[in-house]
Image (tube, rainbow, N blue to C red; front, top):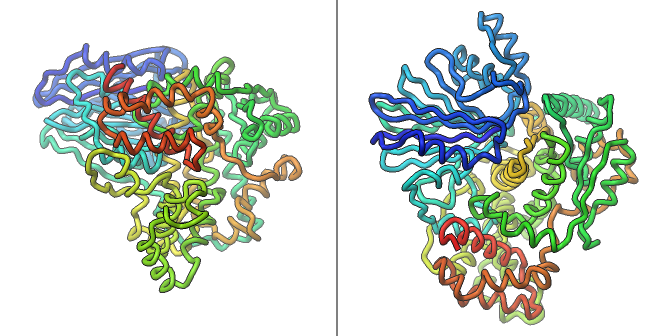
Length: 633
């Protein structure tokens, strides 16, 4: 695991000192080694920089940039099956000077070019400079576990594992894209390919970016898309065969992610996803694996007792940390450094703290993101299917039209319910559409697009996101599988994976995602919805597997999200920070928000109104980010 950064400057104004600035700001991602090289081509200056966290081959042989023939490469991530690929390359006459997966990937590219990624089981973002062709190539893994950002404007290409690398390039224009701010207010994150800055993008998962130094035109190409997996014919395997094959794939995926030359642990929340990782790995381990849990002093949010019972049953070496508002207050001002564009998933606090807990004992931590998308765990899937067909289609359209004539503020009783105006607007839009995927888009929003416009002081344009893929979903016949594919390409990639990558890397440990092994993803995409949700039981397949290792009595309880008790904290320990950053003076300083609108929301909240705390958290996070990255105050 590493941090990578670099540039292509056609004006040839960039130099080694600029590259070092871009690279060294990523030291938290790679504290063990650093490499920087600038290559002068007839058309441009090309810079490649890397900060290394040594996980495989701890020797200096893994130093980057790494070279072979005309290629120079920087690499962030892991290719777990690199030894199998290496053997294949050795049969083709290649020899190796290191035990690193980086060398395997580089020589694999020499032989197979872009097809090398088809052989890779892993997570990766890498950049290759081909000096003979005069070409730079960027690549991101299928699931998007590893991040890669790029800026292209005025004949300059900048790239890096985090936006802070780009910001460290002299003269980088930190122009806020207000359309991205609108997306952030709606979803609490900014969906790919957009970022908070203009002319700056997230490289989408499963994509290459090629930049010819001769044509000066970046070209994006896709090599993998989860939608193609869901478009395959449904499997005709029996239920028992599906469960058996899924467990076999999970065992293989989990085992691969234990490959390391340093200690490895598991984040254990006590839910089915993380429990499956801990259970399967402990069952195949000759020693006690390390598990890590965050709990809350606020009992309504605390699941540490359940996680402790599961760890005791499995026999893991369990570690936990019970946190409260004091820890949240301490970490609040670190969040803009860790998440260097506005990012308001409120579980950033516990995720960052559990990473800190783990960092004292391990260098690699396995998470369990993707379980809800693969096995149909979220309630929003059921809600989307139910709400989109509440009435016959003609009736739904009529109901939506009538709702458009009524101001929700004038409806007695309901107008005093929690976040009623927002929920009213969402149901109006859902019934107007009648499509489950549209319903999930609105359910996934904390505020609607029109509400976001009310919070912003300037006009915005609606950006198309992966929530708007109606046409691309036509070949996926099952409505539930459509929803799973959309959530995979939105919330999973741009929220959950961002959260875990930044939290783990902020403390110098590598986060791994065993459930996102593409073999498991591709198989489960072909499993009928009736097996994924059976007799109204979500995650039926996963539950059947986990119950082989952990008694049902320990596992079965209402699903609770891994979130922080913000409502309690805002009104007590974090009230001072909330009031300061959402004050008229601070809001006017950023010039982004409608001050009166935000103040009305804040005052209503402190007065005991039924206000969504997530709306306030989104604005607070933006204000903290602005203070760190724009105003510097």
